[in-house]
Length: 282
Image (cartoon, rainbow, N blue to C red; front, side, top):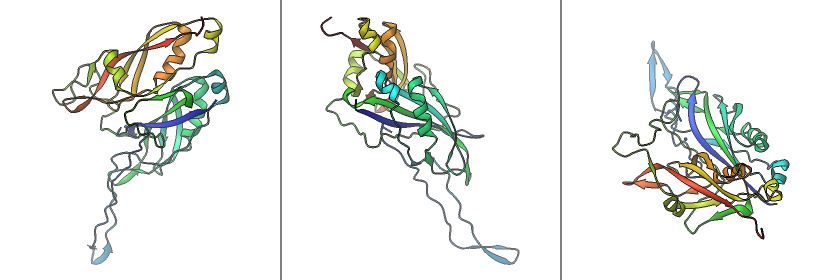
């Protein structure tokens, strides 16, 4: 079965002491900060010394090398799709020193961690010096024949994305209806009929073989939080046959929506997604 592997970089940067934190899917943003190299000399105790270059502080973490992933054989045979979130610790030199799984299907996590350890980043500069940082990498696993896109443009180049924000230790104002410094709410509630028209890319679930053998069918309802970038931020099962929930989450985790704008500003969306499983000829 043909399959597609995609790595996404959701960057919530943190230094070992200070925190810094993550474009559209499949777009890697790069650190545009340039090295400052003032001209001239400085006098020190009667001698003249060249002024040392001053490194500009980084605004985001730049990926230098992105390691592709290999679809695990067991996961492929079982038709398992899904997203794996991995936290990595990055050294002053930009090497990954440590990687640990935050979430993901057990059949997919080893492949994601193996790839994450081979990532290379441009050193992150703070106060003119490279510092250690930590970030989150998101790896998507799905099959080619399960991908559905609509007529709207959807960029999918190399599958990496990077974001930064300055929230200390995580998202600020994450509660429903809270403010982000303006009068606009951070998150709004929309019906499935509205958000259904915002889908740019959908991954169809693989019908679980065990459920198919046992003639289990039905609908799985999930509560979904769509981030400002149009990617799924959180999924919670509400109802549906237990045997079908894993496949539903593994597929919907990778859906991409057109960001919802409120007065010209993107906001998070709280909605519901229904995934239907119907056995043909049953």
